[in-house]
Figure 1 (cartoon, rainbow, N blue to C red):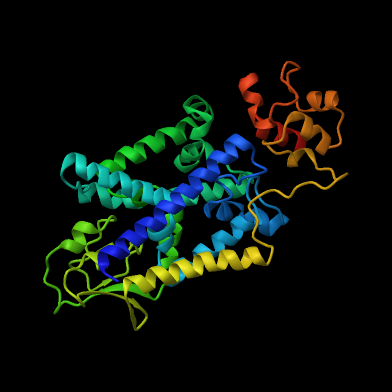
Figure 2 (spheres, rainbow, N blue to C red):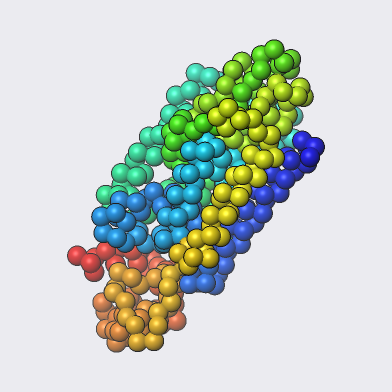
Length: 371
């Protein structure tokens, strides 16, 4: 297959993933979380956030399900086999940044590169974000990072800018900064702030996969450097094994000299198409296998007739009436227990109470009822 068609294939995969996640996020907001998964359930980082609680209590952080843990495990496997392949070939947020980078290059007629004195220290920032995020997620047993998460802010845009600003002002600001930053600098969030990129980069250091440059064949045209969205100095490297490599295959596909740049999985050479195919087969094949086995779930299990739940298990997509019935609580008593103002309709979804009662927080109320 010609290299340009492989590039189109990669873009097509990323576009389809963006459309899928965006659609699911829209449906989750507009039709209720019981029908479509939240963005947290579809993001592998949710698995890392819930890891400590899963091992210590056997339960998951709210909005995280067994399927999220499976997704997390599959991406770890990919990181070991093919470095940060999830970032370069599957991540929708990374793809959006690349789109904006293309737009920026059209607008400004050039490709900006962050000065190395600023770039190098900023690259370490994502590792700090990883440590802080995981520490507080495990300490609080909750998605404490959600209000600061630009990807979560993106997924909640169907609620309207006002609602997103109220619930996730920092996340919305970071989303805008990321998109503007990506107009100027490729993969802005991936380079400097993404905690999952940091984790995959660490695991990828043990991967047998690398891009190898043949010095004798290379004509030093510099196309690999100019095309790399992570600004890796491929042209002057014998082997690309840096934690920054997202295995997007762009450098290999842009190389005009056959054999100058090659993928190698250990001693075995691989062309870009087999690499992309293997990543897709491992990722989607594993998900389909777990789904067929009935263990891949990213939605809450529907209650059976007569079954009740604890107050802590009340979901945001439930109406007040549904939540009262699910907890086997009289409606009036439920209003009092959850301190819901009487003027709020019983048909209001639990997550929408704050719109009628500013300052009301379902998560805070559930925590208080657990104590």
